[in-house]
Length: 187
Image (tube, rainbow, N blue to C red; front, side):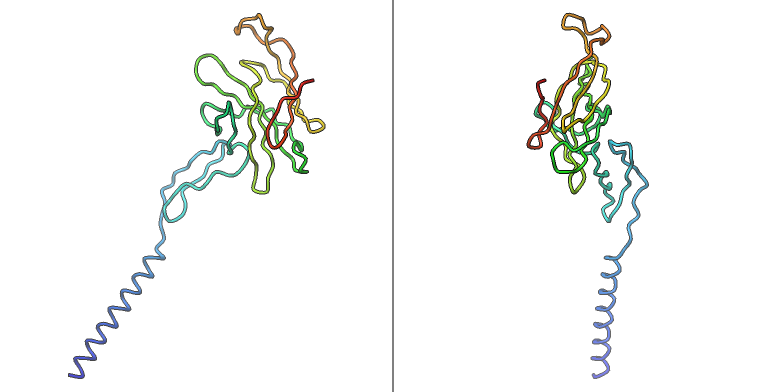
C-alpha cells in the first residue's frame, strides 16, 4: 500500500513538473515574423517585430507626423505630399530648431495646391501645425526664416491669367507661429 501511494504521489509530482515546464517553455517561445517591409512617408522602411509580428512604428520625424489642412488632420501620403523647400530656425521662442516646408495636395483634376507647414521641435520629435494655403499650380522659389518669421517666395499668375499660363509674377508671403498655430502676417 505504501508503494502504491509513493508511485501515485510520484506520478502527480512528475505531471506537475511537466506541466509547469511546458508552460514556461511556451511563454519563452520565439516567434519568426515574415520578412515584409512597410515604407514610411520619409522613404525609410520598417519590418515586423514582437510576439504579434506588428510593423514597427515609423521613425518620429517631421515627415511622419500629422498636420492640419483645411481643418482636417492629415498625414503625408498619396494625396498630401512633402514638397520640400525646408527652412530651419526657432519659430516659437523655445530655443529649438523648427522646420518650415511646403506640402502639396492633389485631390484630383488638374489642380496642385501648395501649403506652408511647420514642424515644431519637441522633446519627443516634432509636432505639426496647421498648414496655410499658398496657391494652386504656383512655382515655389525659396522658403526662409528671418527673425522668427517665415518668408515664402514663389511665382504665381496675374489675376486675369488662365491657369494654363506659366507663373511669372513674384510673390512673397509672411507667416509666424503664435500659440503653436501658423498665421499669416500682413506686410
